[in-house]
Length: 492
Image (tube, rainbow, N blue to C red; front, side, top):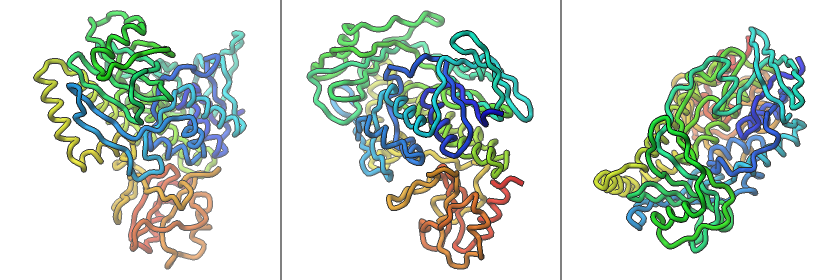
């Protein structure tokens, strides 16, 4: 077979998937039916956990250079702030929300992928495929109409909400489409004080949110009312309509100018049950779509890619057991379920109608987010550093102390990220006392060649290549590490 993996779709999720697999030495081919990368801002937010994950490959720096750092979120109602929380102080090297237009995100990722020797094949569309026990035969249609049949060991669908691969698998996309119309405007705003914060306005008419992008450029989102079921989508808004909403809902007399992108949309909330069908996987919008509340969708998809890639790389190299791949859906599907639940609730809360309901909502939000511990919880959740896999089949039983199996492992500035480099290696955080002879050598294809410092005295931790804890044990329990690697990871 020409390549190990074919990736259909070269948006942010497909690009991250290709980067992760390519840097681990997996033969990758990535295609996209579009002529060129998007030139729209689309998905705008890259959260802290995504930047941590991308740092393993070395491509976070390019995104940070291209983006604008936002450190706080301000919720306003009745012309005044009712809740304010900051991302400063998060236990991460990226204690901010990074605003990057999707056009720039794709550019940075595409250029990084090119540096690994992989180029996206554009105007190439996957039209059908046939999967067997040992390969996938995919039919590709080129721009001139010529068809090509490609055989790979694995196929990954990163081909978006209308995924051809999902449709051919016959997977039901469970969920619904909201009957509320929204507008989106990527515009410049004048007379608005420049501040590195997101503003969320709960007005009696509905929601308005502003997200700073660069200089005086902003993303503005607002709901514009419930529409009849099965009605056609609204036309894109005019600049005058955007200005009218700003005049009504946003304090301070700001003026909208120089529109870059105006659009309308309805919220889709849908998800497949299983992300794997034999040798075929789904990731990103092909597997789940969400409300844009919280900007979680693209980030969830990119983290899908980081979760699957190290497992697939170990399997392709003959090091890891194929059962590793079953954990992909088991771990990532519950994350999407939670994102759907939380973003759905946030959207419902933001679009409440009726003065009594709105007043109760405003009072409750001010009360809850007035508690420092709850503000910290909200910051951890929105930045996604609280994401973990407590029920993962890859977790070792028991656990000595935090970080417990399935939890995000702490990131220490003095160390390179776990999972960096060209091999997906586990990190063992332990004191060398009593380590069996040639222990690290025996697992040279799975473990980093040197120990890292334990997180606490008296304990030892095994950290997965994606930065999540696999095992925690008491110091000196070397047999527990051996048993884990032999039972859970190693190919027989």
